[in-house]
Image (cartoon, rainbow, N blue to C red; front, side, top):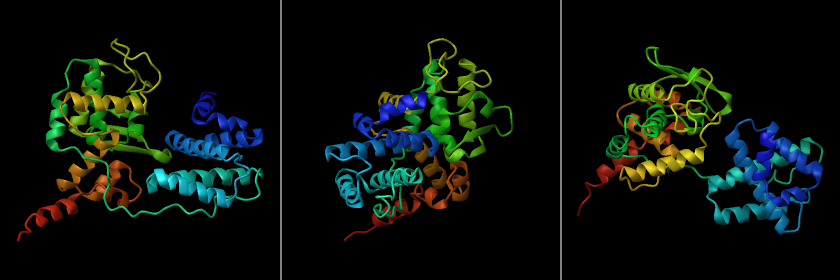
Length: 314
Protein backbone atom coordinates (compact mmCIF):
# COMPACT_ATOMS: atom_id res chain seq x y z
CA UNK A 1 0.00 0.00 0.00
CA UNK A 2 2.93 2.32 0.66
CA UNK A 3 4.15 1.89 -2.92
CA UNK A 4 0.66 2.59 -4.27
CA UNK A 5 0.53 5.77 -2.22
CA UNK A 6 3.90 6.84 -3.63
CA UNK A 7 2.66 6.24 -7.17
CA UNK A 8 0.09 8.93 -6.48
CA UNK A 9 2.99 11.30 -5.82
CA UNK A 10 4.87 10.33 -8.98
CA UNK A 11 1.93 10.34 -11.39
CA UNK A 12 0.29 13.70 -12.25
CA UNK A 13 -3.42 14.49 -11.79
CA UNK A 14 -3.82 13.98 -15.55
CA UNK A 15 -3.08 10.29 -15.03
CA UNK A 16 -6.17 9.98 -12.87
CA UNK A 17 -8.29 10.97 -15.87
CA UNK A 18 -7.01 8.01 -17.89
CA UNK A 19 -9.35 5.04 -18.43
CA UNK A 20 -9.36 3.05 -15.18
CA UNK A 21 -8.13 -0.19 -16.79
CA UNK A 22 -5.24 1.67 -18.41
CA UNK A 23 -4.30 3.47 -15.20
CA UNK A 24 -4.45 0.22 -13.25
CA UNK A 25 -2.21 -1.45 -15.83
CA UNK A 26 0.24 1.45 -15.53
CA UNK A 27 0.45 0.84 -11.78
CA UNK A 28 0.93 -2.88 -12.40
CA UNK A 29 3.78 -2.16 -14.81
CA UNK A 30 5.61 0.01 -12.27
CA UNK A 31 5.10 -2.37 -9.34
CA UNK A 32 5.32 -5.81 -10.96
CA UNK A 33 7.87 -5.32 -13.71
CA UNK A 34 10.28 -2.97 -11.93
CA UNK A 35 11.52 -4.46 -8.65
CA UNK A 36 14.36 -1.92 -8.34
CA UNK A 37 13.09 1.17 -6.51
CA UNK A 38 15.40 3.59 -8.36
CA UNK A 39 14.39 2.25 -11.78
CA UNK A 40 10.75 2.35 -10.72
CA UNK A 41 10.99 6.00 -9.74
CA UNK A 42 12.80 6.94 -12.96
CA UNK A 43 10.28 5.08 -15.13
CA UNK A 44 7.35 6.48 -13.15
CA UNK A 45 8.63 9.99 -13.79
CA UNK A 46 9.04 9.23 -17.50
CA UNK A 47 5.53 7.77 -17.78
CA UNK A 48 4.12 10.69 -15.81
CA UNK A 49 5.78 13.16 -18.17
CA UNK A 50 4.23 11.38 -21.17
CA UNK A 51 0.77 11.38 -19.54
CA UNK A 52 1.11 15.11 -18.85
CA UNK A 53 2.22 15.87 -22.43
CA UNK A 54 -0.62 13.78 -23.86
CA UNK A 55 -3.13 15.68 -21.72
CA UNK A 56 -1.86 18.97 -23.17
CA UNK A 57 -2.64 17.53 -26.61
CA UNK A 58 -6.12 16.47 -25.43
CA UNK A 59 -5.13 12.82 -25.90
CA UNK A 60 -5.12 9.79 -23.65
CA UNK A 61 -2.14 7.42 -23.65
CA UNK A 62 -4.41 4.87 -25.33
CA UNK A 63 -4.95 7.24 -28.27
CA UNK A 64 -1.27 7.97 -28.93
CA UNK A 65 0.11 6.71 -32.24
CA UNK A 66 3.70 6.28 -33.51
CA UNK A 67 3.69 9.81 -34.93
CA UNK A 68 2.75 11.20 -31.50
CA UNK A 69 5.56 9.29 -29.77
CA UNK A 70 8.02 10.54 -32.41
CA UNK A 71 6.82 14.11 -31.83
CA UNK A 72 7.18 13.65 -28.07
CA UNK A 73 10.73 12.31 -28.53
CA UNK A 74 11.53 15.51 -30.44
CA UNK A 75 10.13 17.59 -27.54
CA UNK A 76 12.26 15.63 -25.07
CA UNK A 77 15.39 16.17 -27.17
CA UNK A 78 14.94 19.96 -26.93
CA UNK A 79 15.33 19.98 -23.14
CA UNK A 80 17.12 16.76 -22.10
CA UNK A 81 20.50 15.20 -22.76
CA UNK A 82 20.55 12.13 -25.06
CA UNK A 83 20.99 9.62 -22.18
CA UNK A 84 17.94 11.08 -20.40
CA UNK A 85 15.88 10.96 -23.59
CA UNK A 86 16.90 7.31 -23.99
CA UNK A 87 15.70 6.52 -20.44
CA UNK A 88 12.35 8.19 -21.11
CA UNK A 89 11.82 6.36 -24.40
CA UNK A 90 12.85 3.01 -22.91
CA UNK A 91 10.34 3.49 -20.08
CA UNK A 92 7.60 4.44 -22.55
CA UNK A 93 8.42 1.51 -24.83
CA UNK A 94 8.27 -0.94 -21.93
CA UNK A 95 5.09 0.62 -20.54
CA UNK A 96 3.29 0.21 -23.86
CA UNK A 97 4.68 -3.30 -24.16
CA UNK A 98 2.95 -4.11 -20.89
CA UNK A 99 -0.34 -2.59 -22.11
CA UNK A 100 -0.13 -4.77 -25.21
CA UNK A 101 0.62 -7.83 -23.07
CA UNK A 102 -2.43 -7.00 -20.94
CA UNK A 103 -4.43 -6.85 -24.21
CA UNK A 104 -5.46 -3.24 -23.60
CA UNK A 105 -3.78 -2.16 -26.84
CA UNK A 106 -3.32 -3.97 -30.14
CA UNK A 107 0.20 -2.64 -30.81
CA UNK A 108 3.04 -0.70 -29.21
CA UNK A 109 3.13 2.86 -30.65
CA UNK A 110 6.62 3.42 -29.24
CA UNK A 111 8.17 0.33 -30.82
CA UNK A 112 9.46 2.16 -33.91
CA UNK A 113 10.85 5.22 -32.08
CA UNK A 114 14.61 4.95 -31.70
CA UNK A 115 16.51 6.32 -28.74
CA UNK A 116 19.40 8.71 -29.44
CA UNK A 117 22.81 7.10 -29.23
CA UNK A 118 25.92 8.72 -27.86
CA UNK A 119 29.25 6.96 -27.49
CA UNK A 120 30.95 8.06 -24.27
CA UNK A 121 34.62 7.37 -23.57
CA UNK A 122 34.89 9.19 -20.24
CA UNK A 123 32.42 9.82 -17.45
CA UNK A 124 31.23 13.33 -16.70
CA UNK A 125 30.89 12.92 -12.91
CA UNK A 126 33.57 15.07 -11.20
CA UNK A 127 36.29 13.37 -9.17
CA UNK A 128 37.61 15.10 -6.07
CA UNK A 129 41.34 15.69 -5.80
CA UNK A 130 43.38 14.09 -2.98
CA UNK A 131 43.72 17.55 -1.41
CA UNK A 132 39.94 18.03 -1.42
CA UNK A 133 39.40 14.59 0.14
CA UNK A 134 41.91 15.49 2.88
CA UNK A 135 40.10 18.78 3.55
CA UNK A 136 36.76 16.99 3.80
CA UNK A 137 37.97 14.36 6.26
CA UNK A 138 39.75 16.99 8.36
CA UNK A 139 36.39 18.74 8.86
CA UNK A 140 34.77 15.79 10.67
CA UNK A 141 34.56 15.73 14.46
CA UNK A 142 35.36 12.42 16.16
CA UNK A 143 32.73 12.35 18.91
CA UNK A 144 29.73 13.89 17.18
CA UNK A 145 27.01 11.47 16.01
CA UNK A 146 26.26 13.14 12.69
CA UNK A 147 29.94 13.64 11.84
CA UNK A 148 30.83 10.03 12.60
CA UNK A 149 27.83 8.72 10.66
CA UNK A 150 28.45 10.94 7.64
CA UNK A 151 32.16 10.03 7.56
CA UNK A 152 31.34 6.29 7.63
CA UNK A 153 28.74 6.69 4.89
CA UNK A 154 31.09 8.66 2.64
CA UNK A 155 33.94 6.21 3.28
CA UNK A 156 31.86 3.31 1.99
CA UNK A 157 31.30 5.16 -1.29
CA UNK A 158 34.87 6.47 -1.53
CA UNK A 159 36.87 3.41 -0.40
CA UNK A 160 34.28 0.74 -1.22
CA UNK A 161 33.18 2.08 -4.64
CA UNK A 162 29.55 1.58 -3.53
CA UNK A 163 26.44 3.15 -5.02
CA UNK A 164 24.46 5.25 -2.56
CA UNK A 165 21.42 2.99 -3.07
CA UNK A 166 23.48 -0.02 -1.92
CA UNK A 167 24.85 1.87 1.10
CA UNK A 168 21.39 2.92 2.30
CA UNK A 169 20.15 -0.69 2.18
CA UNK A 170 22.92 -2.00 4.46
CA UNK A 171 21.93 -3.59 7.77
CA UNK A 172 24.04 -4.54 10.78
CA UNK A 173 24.06 -8.18 9.68
CA UNK A 174 25.75 -7.20 6.42
CA UNK A 175 28.93 -6.05 8.16
CA UNK A 176 31.63 -8.34 9.61
CA UNK A 177 34.33 -6.13 11.08
CA UNK A 178 36.01 -9.06 12.88
CA UNK A 179 36.81 -10.99 9.71
CA UNK A 180 40.23 -10.67 8.06
CA UNK A 181 39.77 -8.81 5.87
CA UNK A 182 36.59 -7.15 7.10
CA UNK A 183 33.69 -8.04 4.80
CA UNK A 184 30.55 -6.36 3.56
CA UNK A 185 27.48 -8.05 2.04
CA UNK A 186 26.11 -5.70 -0.59
CA UNK A 187 22.82 -5.94 -2.48
CA UNK A 188 23.36 -4.35 -5.87
CA UNK A 189 21.14 -3.48 -8.82
CA UNK A 190 19.26 -6.41 -10.27
CA UNK A 191 19.17 -8.24 -6.93
CA UNK A 192 22.84 -9.26 -7.08
CA UNK A 193 24.28 -10.05 -3.61
CA UNK A 194 28.04 -9.63 -3.33
CA UNK A 195 30.60 -10.04 -0.57
CA UNK A 196 33.43 -7.52 -0.83
CA UNK A 197 36.42 -6.65 1.38
CA UNK A 198 36.50 -3.39 3.31
CA UNK A 199 39.35 -0.91 2.99
CA UNK A 200 41.11 -0.26 6.32
CA UNK A 201 39.90 3.35 6.39
CA UNK A 202 36.29 2.40 5.72
CA UNK A 203 36.56 -0.33 8.36
CA UNK A 204 37.88 2.12 10.96
CA UNK A 205 35.25 4.75 10.15
CA UNK A 206 32.45 2.18 10.29
CA UNK A 207 33.75 0.78 13.60
CA UNK A 208 33.88 4.28 15.11
CA UNK A 209 30.31 4.92 13.98
CA UNK A 210 28.97 1.66 15.42
CA UNK A 211 30.80 2.30 18.71
CA UNK A 212 29.06 5.65 19.06
CA UNK A 213 25.69 4.65 17.55
CA UNK A 214 25.21 0.90 18.17
CA UNK A 215 23.06 -1.15 15.82
CA UNK A 216 21.21 -4.37 16.63
CA UNK A 217 20.96 -7.28 14.20
CA UNK A 218 18.51 -6.47 11.43
CA UNK A 219 18.68 -2.71 11.97
CA UNK A 220 19.58 -0.38 9.13
CA UNK A 221 23.11 1.00 9.36
CA UNK A 222 22.19 4.47 8.19
CA UNK A 223 18.93 5.95 9.42
CA UNK A 224 17.97 9.50 10.40
CA UNK A 225 19.46 10.20 13.84
CA UNK A 226 17.12 11.15 16.66
CA UNK A 227 19.72 12.81 18.86
CA UNK A 228 19.98 9.78 21.14
CA UNK A 229 22.68 7.13 21.00
CA UNK A 230 20.71 5.18 18.43
CA UNK A 231 18.34 6.14 15.67
CA UNK A 232 14.70 5.45 16.39
CA UNK A 233 13.67 5.56 12.71
CA UNK A 234 13.10 2.24 10.97
CA UNK A 235 13.35 3.94 7.58
CA UNK A 236 16.66 4.51 5.79
CA UNK A 237 18.01 7.92 4.94
CA UNK A 238 16.72 9.13 1.60
CA UNK A 239 19.10 9.87 -1.23
CA UNK A 240 17.97 13.50 -1.22
CA UNK A 241 19.01 13.76 2.45
CA UNK A 242 22.43 12.29 1.69
CA UNK A 243 22.89 14.64 -1.27
CA UNK A 244 22.01 17.66 0.91
CA UNK A 245 24.41 16.40 3.58
CA UNK A 246 27.24 16.12 1.07
CA UNK A 247 26.66 19.65 -0.17
CA UNK A 248 26.79 20.94 3.42
CA UNK A 249 29.95 18.95 4.15
CA UNK A 250 31.77 20.21 1.05
CA UNK A 251 30.82 23.80 1.83
CA UNK A 252 31.94 23.45 5.46
CA UNK A 253 35.29 22.02 4.31
CA UNK A 254 35.79 24.99 1.98
CA UNK A 255 35.48 22.90 -1.19
CA UNK A 256 33.91 24.99 -3.95
CA UNK A 257 32.64 22.18 -6.14
CA UNK A 258 29.22 20.87 -7.14
CA UNK A 259 29.36 17.17 -6.31
CA UNK A 260 26.83 14.55 -5.30
CA UNK A 261 26.86 11.00 -3.98
CA UNK A 262 28.28 9.46 -7.15
CA UNK A 263 31.30 11.78 -7.02
CA UNK A 264 32.78 9.71 -4.18
CA UNK A 265 32.37 6.42 -6.05
CA UNK A 266 33.95 8.12 -9.07
CA UNK A 267 36.77 9.55 -6.97
CA UNK A 268 37.58 6.18 -5.40
CA UNK A 269 37.63 4.24 -8.67
CA UNK A 270 39.55 6.98 -10.53
CA UNK A 271 42.21 7.21 -7.82
CA UNK A 272 42.49 3.41 -7.57
CA UNK A 273 43.19 3.15 -11.31
CA UNK A 274 45.59 6.12 -11.25
CA UNK A 275 47.62 4.40 -8.51
CA UNK A 276 48.03 1.27 -10.61
CA UNK A 277 45.00 -0.74 -9.52
CA UNK A 278 43.83 -3.28 -12.06
CA UNK A 279 40.67 -2.38 -13.93
CA UNK A 280 39.32 -5.94 -13.48
CA UNK A 281 39.55 -5.55 -9.70
CA UNK A 282 37.87 -2.12 -9.85
CA UNK A 283 35.04 -3.61 -11.92
CA UNK A 284 34.58 -6.44 -9.41
CA UNK A 285 34.52 -4.13 -6.39
CA UNK A 286 32.19 -1.64 -8.13
CA UNK A 287 29.80 -4.38 -9.25
CA UNK A 288 30.10 -3.50 -12.93
CA UNK A 289 28.81 -6.14 -15.33
CA UNK A 290 31.05 -4.83 -18.11
CA UNK A 291 34.61 -3.47 -18.16
CA UNK A 292 33.36 -0.79 -20.57
CA UNK A 293 31.48 0.79 -17.65
CA UNK A 294 34.61 0.81 -15.48
CA UNK A 295 36.62 2.35 -18.31
CA UNK A 296 34.47 5.49 -18.03
CA UNK A 297 36.22 6.13 -14.70
CA UNK A 298 39.69 5.67 -16.18
CA UNK A 299 41.11 9.16 -16.72
CA UNK A 300 44.74 8.05 -17.23
CA UNK A 301 44.76 8.45 -21.00
CA UNK A 302 43.21 11.90 -20.73
CA UNK A 303 45.72 13.03 -18.09
CA UNK A 304 48.65 11.62 -20.07
CA UNK A 305 47.41 13.42 -23.18
CA UNK A 306 47.12 16.67 -21.22
CA UNK A 307 50.68 16.29 -19.91
CA UNK A 308 52.09 15.65 -23.40
CA UNK A 309 50.01 18.43 -24.92
CA UNK A 310 51.57 20.84 -22.42
CA UNK A 311 54.94 20.17 -24.08
CA UNK A 312 53.71 21.73 -27.30
CA UNK A 313 55.21 25.18 -27.92
CA UNK A 314 56.06 27.51 -30.79
